[in-house]
Length: 116
Image (cartoon, rainbow, N blue to C red; front, side):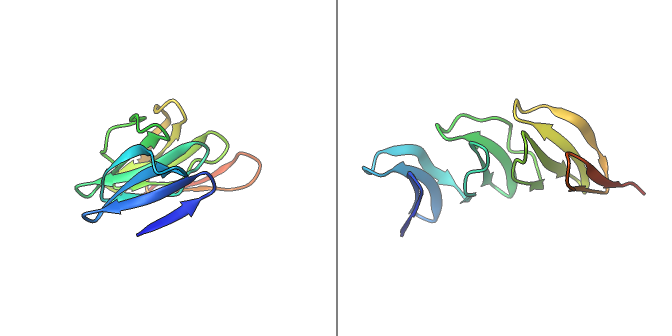
């Protein structure tokens, strides 16, 4: 099965996801359990029950350590492990460490945080 996304497409091989160009060239090998649509040039990919971020060339932005990995928004993404969430920048580092029980993007660059 193949579906096109703007200039790229997902390819599924033995139930693994990857990324191909319009001419069929492999951009990201079919090695991921799941691969999101692009978000600000990054993809959320999953392997063995954990998620991480990769670039459109397949380079790792982060390790595959997250239980939750959200899409990037204005250069940041909400990600977390063990039900604690933080704010990751597009260099792959946390600008706000994983300390919140709930973290949501609001408007105007603000976040709603909940901590028990």
